[in-house]
Image (tube, rainbow, N blue to C red):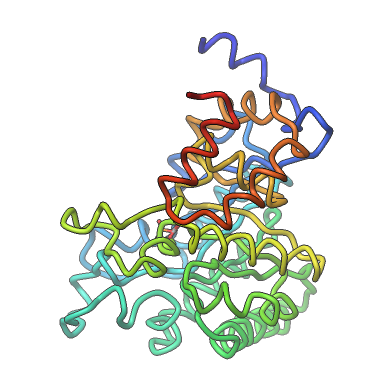
Length: 324
Ligand code: PEP
Ligand code: MG
């Protein structure tokens, strides 16, 4: 089977009816680059930079970050690399910062909220990203955005750091595409407005499910309510994809739902442009995508939205894909 999957190296990820789905990889850092190239990813769809900041006693310096980003960008040549700014908080703590304990960390000062409040930490990362952008095809992505104002403030800081670097070094860098993770119901609900500001969306289904279902993604007591196939979650995903399409912005998915064949079928039916998955599952997903038709999935994905429950949705999908 491994051997058979190798046949998909160098191939396009295209449905039977000719729709290209870009297959990108999720990475934690430069140590994953071999997996990205070995599995023929078309780019990096999510570089989780928080791993650079974790399991140590202090913040990574600008230089250290620059080296890590540069390595990833130069080793992927001209393929797109989407680097997500620090997504700390929730379950991901940085003990050396001695931040106050929160009673609801997932609803607290995490991700972009933390970065906007701790501007020096944010600017250091943005400077490292700007400098690294010379070495490849960088796109920057902000996590856990809930308002347009957060996006605009974060983007303004990136532009400021870029202009300052250009002025200091008397050079002009190419534009850097800037997008957001859509992982809060708020962002999904205003995705049509957000789409006028961003260059792309990447749907973070792991958090989007947690916040839509109000069920902590790590709490076993409520794991029965953590339902990727709940019609509420699917309706939000559909809305984000429609908003991207109608504003000519591409939309990807970088949460776990991008790795499951059943949800991939729905996402393709909804009109997704890109899936970012763990490198090791990439070729099996390319094989799967190559065997389905988008037009077959369109009707199914319309139908699931009016289902009463996740069970009903799953039943419909399984019936449609002849899995029963
Ligand atoms: C997500 O929330 O779906 C996501 C991809 O980000 P993370 O899992 O790192 O929160
Ligand atoms: Mg997330």
